[in-house]
Amino acid sequence: MIPYPLSTSSNCGDPMYYSFDCDTTTGQVSFKAPSGTYRVSGIDPNKQKFFIQVKGGRSLRLNQSLPFNLTSPRNSSSNVSSKITNDVEIAWDPPLEPICNLTADCLDWQHSSCKSASDGKRRCFCTVSFRWMAQT
Image 1 (cartoon, rainbow, N blue to C red):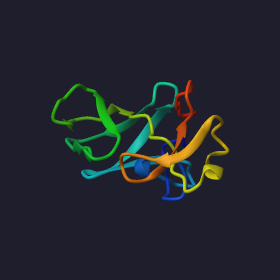
Image 2: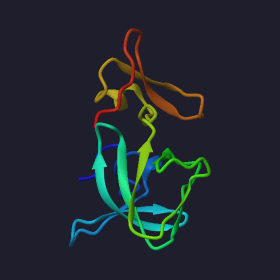
Image 3: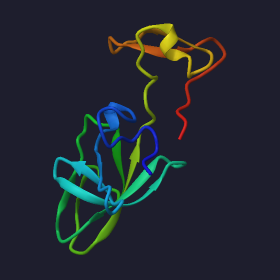
Image 4: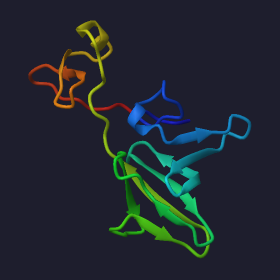
């Protein structure tokens, strides 16, 4: 199971998190990165983290424009080399508010309305006294 906002296609989850494939035959999930595709060994939606396996000297490189951050092992360049199989922990940033065209598009998010956002899109923003929290 892939928790929101992670996505296995452009029409599910949040499009910014479309970096996963799922083999429907085996149920195996993979993470797609610029340096290759990696087997996902676990997902922790409560901590907004997932684990991938990096093996045999492969170097992991993350797309800096996507909402994923390498958290383990610590490496400021976002590159990891491994001689053996290692699980690498990657965290994801919380998603932005949902995209909308009309306030009616925000009905699934109580106490919100459709307004223009700084990124040029319209999003469901919370009304006064409420704040956006993505559900997992």
